[in-house]
Length: 78
Ligand code: SF4
Image (cartoon, rainbow, N blue to C red):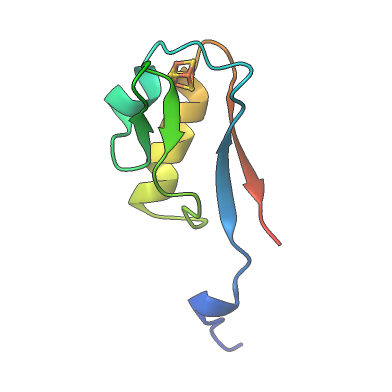
């Protein structure tokens, strides 16, 4: 069985629903490499394609698990 090159894997995208985000800041406090804040404290995604494994994915998952508004999701990209 051969290895699959990382470049052939589909992207894994983190998204924030702006209509749900109220600016608690938990996401960017816990995962500052993936999430940042705008001038009002609302979440801004710094790295959209976080990959399926690794530190960026772990931070994205932390954001999902700790957002009180369930404003963050991780989805498979195209
Ligand atoms: S934790 Fe959720 S509600 Fe708070 S800033 Fe991040 S995305 Fe917005």
